[in-house]
Every structure is written in C-alpha cells, then in structure tokens.
Image (cartoon, rainbow, N blue to C red):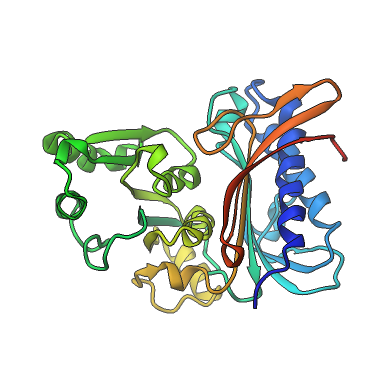
Length: 316
C-alpha cells in the first residue's frame, strides 16, 4: 500500500521546523543544546499529524528523554500505523560549529516496513543504480569492489571516487585507496548524506563504504531505495549488551548481510532539510520574517526525487 501524498508535505514541515529551531544555537559550540532544539521541534510537529506513529529508529531508550526514543508513540493517535526513523540533527558537530553538512532527517513507512535497527555500528556499502548484481558486495575486499566497479563503468581506476567517513578505523581502506590511486572523499561526520551522494552523477561519488551508524544506515536506505541504488549492511556488535538489545528487537541472525529489500519494504518517504549548506541541501537563509529552506525529498511510489525550496515561517 502506498503512503498518502499528504504525508510528504507534512514531513517536509517536520524537518523544516526542526532545522529552523536550531538557528539560535548554530555556531555556539554546544552540540547537546542544538540537538535538543531540533528534537523538541520535531516531536511537536510530528504530534500534530494524523497518524499512529512509532519511532523505530531514534536516539536512544525511553530513559534518555528528551531524545526521540525508540518505541515512542507520535501523532494524534488516529489514522494509519506508521514506522518512523529520525535523526533530528545529522551532523551535530557541524551545527554546533557552523560548518557545512548539518541536516534534519526523517523517513517513514507503514508499520513493520522498516528494519528496527539497534544503536550499534554497521559495516555498509552504497552505490548507484544500474550496477548489476554481483559487481559489488560487502563480502568482497575493498580492492575487488573498486576494480569491479571501474570495469563495469568502463572507467580508469583514477576516475573512481569513493566516499568514506574519516575515522581511524578506516585507515586500512584509505591507505588502499591511495595505492589504487583512486579519488577519496573523506567526510568527518554525517554518513546519512554521505551515502546519498551515490544517487546522482552531479555529486561525483561512485561508491560509499565503511563502518558507521546502524540507524543512519536505515535512514539512508530509504532515500537510496527511491533511486533504485544498491545498499548492503552488516551490524557490528561490540558487547553482550548490544547483542541482547538486537535480539530484543527481533534480530536473530547477528551475522546477516542486509540488502535494501530487507531494510525498507514497500513505500517510503524521506526528507532532509539543510541547516547549514551541504551537497544535498542548502542551509537555511533568513528573509525578513521568513526562512528560506531547502529539503531533499523522495517518495518511492510517486517517483519523487527532488529538492523542495520554500519560504516558511517558524510555527512553534
């Protein structure tokens, strides 16, 4: 069943207002406060929507309020049952330091259509559409994936661009990228937007890979699915507590390699509003008593993949 088109407008409003709410704290070095502003605003707008919503990808457990916690019920408690994945502020450090790349992000689908991902790391790989099955695989080593991709695209290795989170844990693959003489785009934060860079040639990224957040993997998968892109992920569990949490959420096979179809089923909507400028959405601009917002949106069933630029007022 397809999501009603009215929810796209409602969800754009959610990320717009969450983004606008952060502005008093953008650049003030307090990442907790700027995150709280986004979270509070997102919760208020979500609670105004006619739906029986439940957070399946959030920012923690119920005892970590005021974060939008996993299992939290949202909406007016009437209408369809909706799974909600949120990251009120993707790129918290970017917003706190007024650096490019801060976004407010949400994705939704009908109940039980989104993977309920535990808050743990995920090894993941994302690539563009039209790549045949078997060309790229999470089980291949880095070199094989890059060489296969170059061969399939009929490109020289030095013309391939890989996007990777700049973390010490990725030193080996960053060093390997240098040996292969491929282009490397390192990002310091925000692996939701990093994965989205494979969706369009204009971003100049052929493949995104490495270890990042599991919840962020589900969020980005919703956008990638609308573009028919490729995505695979495997959870990484550091301790027994993480394993128990995963099992409590219904994950039985701890070594499972998730494909897109395992992460998001059926129709989905994805929205990401820019707070500061990023490659997928411009940051908020002030125009008199209004705010000019830019939101990257997808709605799979309606084949919507675009940016929505609007002049809006703060409503909360």
